[in-house]
Image (tube, rainbow, N blue to C red; front, side):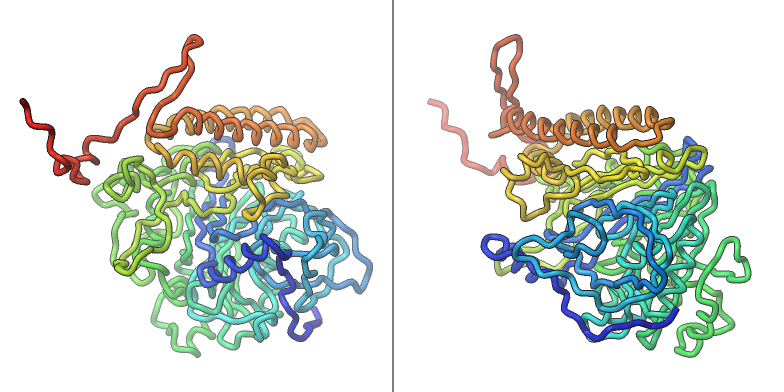
Length: 584
């Protein structure tokens, strides 16, 4: 391709004035924290219950990450057309333009139109696909999940004064626009990044690299990428996941020894080891370990990545996790240098969609790392640990990092089923907001529109307006935040609702198998499911408020105190409170 870069361009995505301006200023204030911290999986076709290939993504940004799911239409392009490359702000609105044929991105009053920072040659035809911050799944069942990683090199995009044109946001979209297989998607992204340059979400080591889980109905690849030392190209690798195994990436590279002569299992930058040797990162006496060479290790704190890897594998392979010589120890020295975990691990039971959902919701329940246990979980035994500290005496330290996370804007499971027509074989099980409070709803990749419930509202939408719009994001947010009132007591109610409605979703998915156009039925189910989640929020607020369990029984209203856990009362010094009144 010929280079068609433009000069510097503004990000061009400002918020309307008034109340929304305050939200924009808050987002700017938290910008340094916006590096994504996402958990992703791939399940091979012989590791799944039905023979499908699955991948996951949790969009674990901060309070302003754009949660909308949209549908990008297929289009034909004239000879000589170019594809604009946009900057990658991940807060709302992530894009403001009419050029992509997405009504949710059309400019609204008070919004500045997004300006391209460069162009690449366009292809003759681009495929339809679902998109959130990143590309999700296209009409040919190619699916993607993303996780930001540290890297030894980082670069800036043109919007920040650099020369690397392509972010992972745009690479994932271009891959879904052009590819019909996972292997092709990886090659397209790698080739473009080498030619036009790759930049991460930030130029810090925590945001300099990226990883994508890329699947199709036959296979899945773990794709890692970082800038090269010049900041104008890229270094990348894609490693095939064995069909009987599950891979986990949680904000750190995981691909170890690379053999580019094995073109079935590896793709990548052909001269990566020469580049690494030139910069003193590797020498010919060492194994060609991609992670040890190009990763900068776990970010935030020790176990930030590894605990989630262990947490996922222990649910898919519990016997291996419990073995004395376990290949997945819960604790280790240095995740990057010691390589305590394998790249992938065979599963011990075939995984269904609901099993993968359980992994995405995990907070290590019943283990020594259970986030609901102890004083930190509070009397309500909540797994959520909010960021920040108030007051003047803030201690140093870290919370355990769960897989299911309160600050997730959306999570999903993409599922590719090769024995079915593409339109209904590919499914994104979409869950707005945090995984442990959401409802995963199936959306067939052949749909011609995204549900309005998932494509309109965002964090700055008022609750009243969100309710009128039947917003899925705000329904799930309401459920999880109300559940914090009495989390341990409410959890069985929440999980029962998830099981009931996700079973209905599986029934819907099965009913669409012979349906040429899944749009109408899928949209109707999304509307019904989100409405049910708003009803659940109402029921939880009515049933568990002011420390009481409230209900109507046979026409009689009853209210009884829930009380505190006795162990927690002892830990907080209840027995040292005011003494009882002396006996007369």
